[in-house]
Image 1 (cartoon, rainbow, N blue to C red):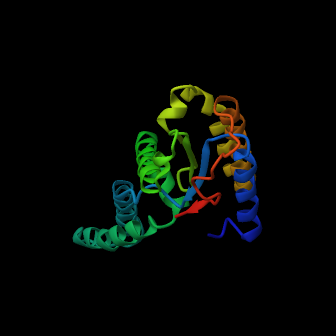
Image 2: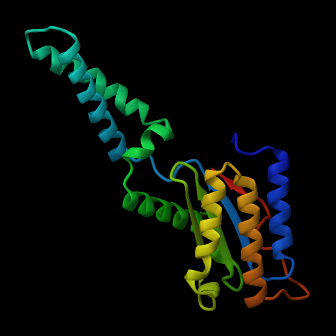
Amino acid sequence: MKHFNQSDLDQISKAVLDAEKQTTGEIVPMIVTQSDDYPGARWRLAITVSLLFGFLIYYCINYSDPVWILWAQIPGLYIGYWLGVFGFILRPFLSGSKIEEEVHQRALQAFFSHNIHLTNERTGILIMVSLLEHRVEILADTGINAKVSKDTWNNILTDMVNKIKSNELTEGICIAVKECGVILTKEFPGTHENPNEIKNKIIIE
């Protein structure tokens, strides 16, 4: 992924390692290009481009037969749907509620597919960044939620989103990992054994 080089990956891995030294918690950073294909938004974009093609034909070309306007809209549909592969074009056609739903569902899927729920004390935590939507989702396992309020993560989320928008993704992830580590160390201090149950690497999908 173009957002990371090996130095960035090493920096994130070190941040996870340092954050977990004093806690039994397991911190898993993850980044996805987008949380969903958003077919509904792509069709809205396609219809918009199709209508634009129709207006251009109507105002720019003197056709007496309105059928030509309809014919012009067909390639507009295909082109508009294809343009949906570009995130900066698709993003304005996404609704806030749909984004929240899909990012949350993607984070839940990742939480279980990567076995973050299988730590001994149920102290796994996922920090997932979804680039297209400029969203961050933090999911904590039941052991953490029993002691830490979900509102605790709000400041971390805000800081990370600001970093993403400023193209400081690596720094944002490292800061979030560190802040989560501070919270986990307070509530779940490490033991003399303190096994590393999940690899200290960022997941990229």
